[in-house]
Length: 423
Image 1 (cartoon, rainbow, N blue to C red):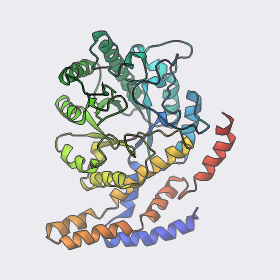
Image 2 (cartoon, helix red, strand yellow):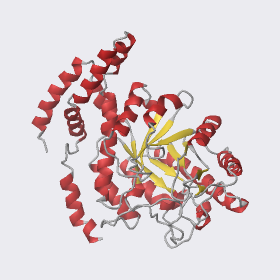
Image 3 (cartoon, rainbow, N blue to C red):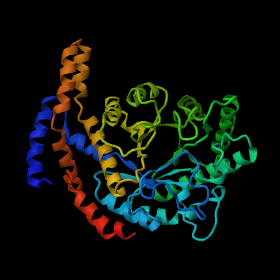
Image 4 (tube, one colour):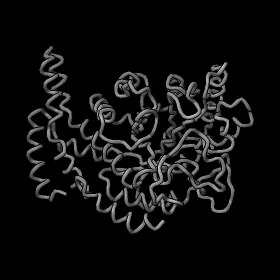
């Protein structure tokens, strides 16, 4: 781990290098620290949830693989793990909850009956740490989702159950927003689809429109407090051939209903560039929710790293100066490694990508392109790759009071030895 003197000396040199290409590193650090990243609670317990009883948890096309020791077994352990993560991360964070992390004790409360009181522990924890909460209805891992259909189900009573669940979740999200003084982004993803070719692709999508319209018709919800997003997908486990809520479906639905469109890095064909979609979709969508994830050979939700997909995504946001039009959240789950380490690698990589976007010499690049100097534009793009951004990152961490470099590994090792290994 570099010393404070080494960090300061390296930063002074880096700042000079960036000044030469017209980049203000001080402004970049300040803005990179101000952008909130929403940490997903489900990495802590391998997407198991806290419901009583735990029926139907294997349904819904979501699976965390691996058997590393130390998985959080209850809400208190999840929050204790997140406390360590929050302590080691620079910048602003939020925490993102799924509905099946309600804590109801021995009482059985089905999802269509959930209320803010069932999340009192999470809310109190967030208030004490002065962080915002985001939310997600859990349209999976339930006996009424076992068929692979929820809001698009052919059975009206099944659809009604999930509609009521969605409505309950929006009330909970609004309650979080009021109590925490921060709008709550509530993201709707459903697993609905077919493993093999269906005969009718039309009717499920018609039902899905009707179901979502019923959910969003609640006029008691203030949309400035409860910010609804919808998330599409290319395919999933059990929906390999047909996904009701596809990218095209949700892009049209979100635009027509004034909702936020969610773009998940793992929900597209491997050859598609999500970064390229940003400037196209945001011509028509005022805001988007970005889920940083990492597909390997499918939507496998690997831990985010600073790969080209993540870097390019936030580079496009920076070049469009669209920071005030995006929400940033993590979405991955890996049970094969230390779960706190997974959080820290993924969250730090995401903020590093944000910083790199802000360190891009965009003005010089645009000027060269406008002047018809393609060689200059290309040369500056190549130069940007080798500029000492790592020194700027270490300075960012130092100003946040968190370890730079790999300095956080020692704290994670201590916690693993003293806490995780005893679970």
